[in-house]
Image (tube, rainbow, N blue to C red):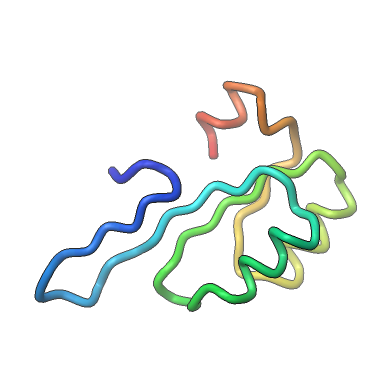
Amino acid sequence: MPEAGVAVFVFGKEDYKMRLIIVGGGKVAYNLISTLPSGKRNITVIEQEFEECERLADELDVQVFNGDGTNREILEHA
């Protein structure tokens, strides 16, 4: 499995998926997620504020974890 934030390109095939883990769900993360092409990405966001988690999950096609992005257990689940 590719590491977080690494896009795997297989020459001759267009069916790659970019896997990203983003810690923090603020404006920069929201804009980054919005600019990435849908369908060719698997994005997980780790955010501490519960209300922000709900907003991101409602508005964007991402998986959101509510918790501390420096917590090893949260990172392993992401």
